[in-house]
Length: 158
Image (cartoon, rainbow, N blue to C red; front, side, top):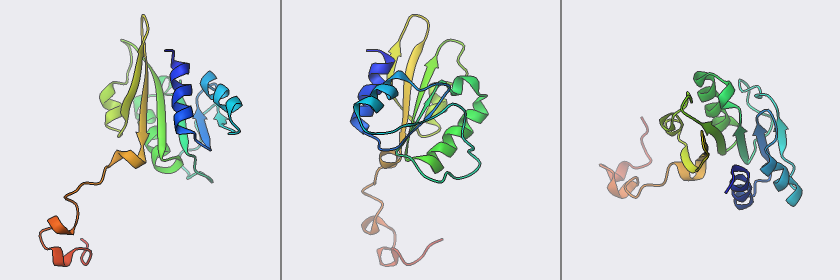
């Protein structure tokens, strides 16, 4: 499976209505997805102004060939702002090799999971994903039944 086939498969599963693509060019998988559906992804060749909240939110943000050009601190800020302000789901396509500044733990620290890895001779294409709906699962112990003082559940906040 190629990286574009993987992305196209994931896009067809997710079916985002509004998609924001960050990177120097639109990935071929997104172009194919756009042709196959009536969705109109928005391509952005440079980073949006992440200091301000967007006028509209998106279902999915796809970051491709962007982190390789940014210092790690700016990349972390970019991913954090995208995840908090732009969309509940963020996918990062990253080309990882021996010289890569980013490691798996950097993405994990941002709440992302490694979805897929496609190895080639000298590098690996890695897809990382953050989804707000699955990020923090509901725990069975976090309710009034297991609280120290159940009679005070929902009354006091500190």
